[in-house]
Image (cartoon, rainbow, N blue to C red; front, side):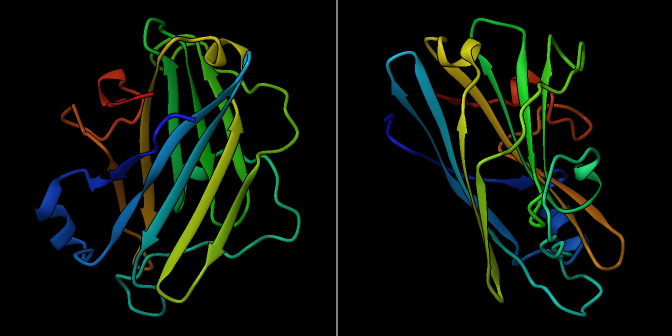
Length: 192
């Protein structure tokens, strides 16, 4: 297994956006690593979301667990943890969306926001552990063959947070553009 790389996400707009939205105490951190075994590889990501919850208008909304979690589109419209993974030397990339509810989504793109499709898999191996002041989410994703065969991967970690007052914030390792855009390859700053 590669040595896990720690990460800490920052909101688009930086400290001023964090203060404007009342998110000074929010932290999104974790670790990412790849475990290789022959021609197969697993992407391991752990997320830790520390956020005020409850009835405060600025509190982060954490979707409640659903009875039968499954594949769902549009998860990014609410609190959602995300990962973008591609081969360093290729244009194609994969997007994983994980909702605290247990719902998930998986997409493959041929290039920047181009050629999107949903590969036919039936489950996403991740777990969610909620607590009163934080949320842990652990993903163990068997990488598709094209990613498992790559000599090096480039990874972008991001999150969308929805607040009780309806505000949305967009968190990433790096925000390279003038708008929050998790699909930009220059935002995939981790190398594994």
